[in-house]
Structure formats: C-alpha cells, structure tokens
Length: 571
Image (tube, rainbow, N blue to C red; front, side, top):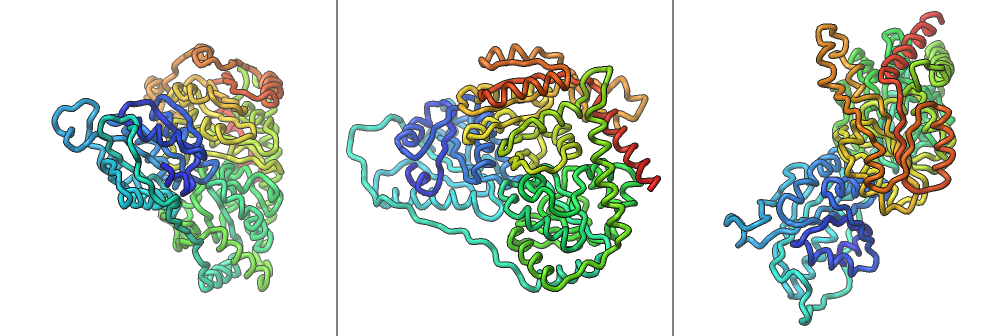
C-alpha cells in the first residue's frame, strides 16, 4: 500500500467487507492516504471516477471478495471509454477455496475483460524481502499504466488467507522506496505540422471543433482561440471541452449555440465548411453529426491523443499526437507565414449566426411560459448562478445538450465535468460527490429526475462532504429526451411513449430526508435564482427539485431552431 502512495495515490475509496481487512488496514496506516467510505460498490466506483476527473490521478478502490467487484463494472467501462485513471484492488480468497462452494467466492480473474487496461494477479502475501520489492514494483507499474497513453483501469486481485487481522510477529522490512516511472509527452512531427499549415492555406471555409475533454484541455484554450483568429476558422467548442469558459472565452469566431444553427437544413447549408479540424472527441451535438454525415466531401481531420474518434467515419486523416503540443506548433507555424485568404462572405454569415443565436437564446430563456417554468430557462439560470472557479457536473441525456446549446462563453473559469465515455446515466450523483470531495470550490450537478432515481443511493456518498454541492434535479416527468427522437413522431406509437419516458411521480423530499439533506422544491425561474443565490454561498449539500413543464425542452428547442433557420434564410 505504501508503494501505491509513493507512486502518487492519495485517495482510497473503501466499501465494507471482511476479506479486504488487511488491505483496508494497510491503507489506513499510510499517512498520505485519505480514506473515503462509500457503502455501495457501484456508487463507490463512480465516486472514485469523479475524484480522478478532478485530480487527473487514480483513486484506489478496495472491496471484498465475491460479487462486490462486479459492481465496479459500469465505472470500469466508463474509465476505459473516457480514458480516466482508476485502480481497483479486489480482495479474493485463496485458490484452494475456489470451486468448492466456499462462501463469497467467485472467479475474479480478468473480471472486467477488455475494459481493464491491465490485470495483475498479486496472489497471496509472502513475508520475504524479494516478494515485497516485487510488490512495490507492481504498485508503481499499475499507477503508471492508469496514467499512460489512453488512461483507464488497472485491476489488482489480491488473495488473503485467515487470519485477516495483523499478527503480533515480526514483519519483514524492505527498502523505503519504490521505483519511479516517467511518462513523457510525445514529440510533434514537423512534417505533419507543415502539411496542416498547407491544408489551412487551401481552405476557404475552415472550422475548428472540440468535443468533451478532460480538465487538462483548458491548457490549450488560448491556442485554439488564436488559431481561429489567424485562419479565420469558425470555432465550435462543446460546453464540456474546457475551452468555452475562462480567460480565452472571447478569442476567435465562436459559435457557442452551434447546435441550434446546425439543427436545420438551412443552417447546415449556410455554414457548410470546406475544412474541419476536430480536436479530440466529436461534440455532443446531434446536429453536428448530421452535418459531417451529410457532407462526406468536406475535408475532415481529427487530432487526438489516442483512439479513433470518428463516429461517422468521415475523417480523411487522423493524427495521433499530443494535442496541446501539436496545436501550439501549428499556431506558431501559421503565425509566421500565413495570411487569411478565406471566403469573406462565409465569415460574415458565421458572424451573423453568432449574433442572432445569442439574441434568440436570451429571448427563449426569458420567455414567460404560462404552463410553468421551462426546462431551458431552468438550466440557463442554474449555470449563470455559478461563481468563478466553480465545478459544473452535467448529466447525460438532456442536461448536457441544454448546457451546450444554451450557455454562452464567458470569463468564468468553470470546470465542466461530463460522463461521455459510455454516455450513460450511471452513478451521476456519486461522480459529482467524488468531484466535490476533493475540491474547495462550489460544485453543481444538473441531471434529470430519472438519472437521480438511477443513482439515488449516491446521495449517501454526499453526507461526508465538507464543501458545497448543489444537486439540481430537473423534474420533467420522465425521460423527455425520447420526445425528441423519431419514435415520438409516429402517431401510431403515441400510446407507447410512457414505455420510453417512464414517468415515476416520486417525492424527492423523502430521499433528501433519508440522507439528512436540505431539500428545496422550486417551480419558477425567479424562485430558482433566489434559492441558488442563498445556498451556493452558504455551502453544504442541497437537493433542489426543479419542477419544469414536461414538454418545454422539446417545444423550446424547436422554436429556437425554427427561428434561427428563418432569420438565416432572410439574410
């Protein structure tokens, strides 16, 4: 355990059990490690993922033998898909207890299959110097593997034989150090940079787009803005890209509400590019996917640290390299030898789209809706209430799309967290608790009512938090994203829609009471604004049930797309 600490592990997330006793006690004996107890293993794993998203280093999960480690599986998948560092230490029984009906014993070898970046069978403890030195080597190697190219989960399986408690005898001493492994950044290929410069020189209507990314992506936000200015490229950055908010918020031709523009055929044709440089993952926007799918002749280049982030298979060139270093080299090369010679008319159309969408969005979120508070207004008010430096955790389905489409760039250095690896609604509350557990800044989670019910047990993980965490549950009467999918447009299927929206009609005040959390139910934008102005500075964990009109997301989004398309057509 000390070897893991020396390799950089600072946080240990523990779920109770007997077979894990020696490992839990070992972690508790290391002064530099912080213990976090989360009873449910599924919640614990997403809690650890939340911590890793904030810190960029793996937290250690410890569980007992049997089915306990299986509950980590969804988070392990998310770690693999989203390249998040994670360490799992599953306690196991000795080999002689397997296959003989011994209690709480299952085959844990390579439990996570291909979703674990690496599996290490530690075996039973041996009290000799050589074995202990090897154990420290494995600890350093495991941590390095979670941080190497691609990130992900390393699964350590350790067998323990009774007695599980420490003995009073002598313990073998080993040298007080662990091996060190450095992972360097990749070198930029000068030929690649020169070719990229040539591509931009030929382009008349270039676009730079950026999708969901880790916090580290904020390091090259300024460079992306400068590239937009140098090349005349339109800048389409996802709200979760770490590039929309902060010091570089006003650099470049930023079309913050691009999902609304590209949501119509008119918008996709008006702003059709001839070059796309995609930085990292593709944006969340479904309208963006329609654009690239309908324009296979557009030169589409992907720059990413790893993988093949090209869901529509339209990329002509995938560059695997350190993103920040490559963008910086490209910026420097273009600044020295390139003049903008693009399509001035196209840039004016882009600038016009930027201005009209800003006005349209503000009109929509300020709209007086007689049917009740609109979902779009609720999200806008919530994000606008956050102070500089706050953590914004956005749930999947509708919330992430609302934030992306509605919230413009500004100078606040918001850290935006999203779960876009497998795009599921698993463990959203637990993940937010993990972020808040290691941050002194206020944190806000925005999620839907079904997502909250899916991780209602995650509220238990919030009780030990010392910082502020505001959980905003948008209660729109079920999973309303299905109202925006093709199934909802079929009149003969109208009666089947409850099978998709699955309204539950739960009283969330009872859940808050169960876990001892302050509860607020709000039904208007003004009431929401006043409540947030009160609870955010006060700190603590608060559960806000924000009751919104069930169909307001679909209706409001349709109004915005139609209005933007109409105004573009008139220009």
